[in-house]
Amino acid sequence: MYINRTYRNFDENENLIPFQVSIKETDLYLKAQKNLEKDARDVAFRYRSQIENYILSHPAFEKSLVPLPYDDYAPLIVQEMLRASSLVGVGPMAAVAGAIAEFVGKSLLEYSSEVIVENGGDIFLSTAEEIIVKIFAGASPLSQKIGIKVLPSETPLGVCTSSGTVGPSLSFGKADAVTIVSPSTALADSVATAVGNRVKKPDDIPFGLKVAESLPGIKGVIIIVGEKMGVWGNIELLKL
Image 1 (cartoon, helix red, strand yellow):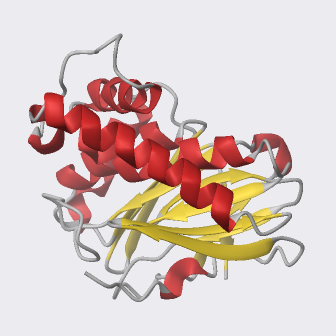
Image 2 (tube, helix red, strand yellow; image 1 turned 180 degrees about the horizontal axis):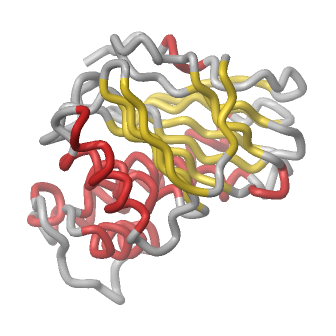
Image 3 (cartoon, rainbow, N blue to C red; image 1 turned 60 degrees about the horizontal axis):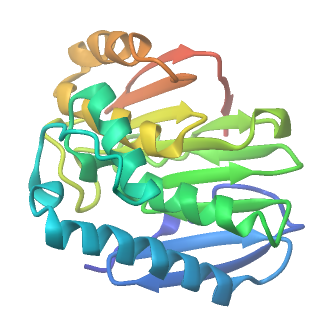
């Protein structure tokens, strides 16, 4: 499925070089101090292969909607997906986009001290300059009108968004956007899914905020349903 990634203008940092990498369902938009397309493709392929090979021997990993037991012998990216999903009560594949963004981003830090990786709305950031992350919320009038200011001292950082109205990802909710900020991009992805599943109408926003607030490792949350928005955490929002 092709999705027009109009929301990918998520920062104003003109000092970094943009490039893209696509491997099957993995569609990465990246920025670094130099074009690292080949290196990014290599590491993305490696991490995808580790997940795919693990699924071959553990088929439940791909389809389970509930946490699976931790596996000390699994590849590190699979272990992180198992850990993140177990904290919030969702299946491990709820963390896949965030985990790939994070593991690719951290691998590329070997070649560039600044790296941004976006994977289907899930973002890993490690930068030396202030970044503004726009929140894409589909047809909501608030879509791309709200931004999160990220300071260099806060990175590496994950900013992940789940939606029940936009994109192909599975969600049992109806939120236009549930954005989670966390030092762990894999965890942010899992929590965005878990909270998004619980938000079906504007009145559910306070409950969704409480769910996110109760979880360890979460820096902030933003929930948008139509014209309504709820916010919790230590994050700075900007009107764009």
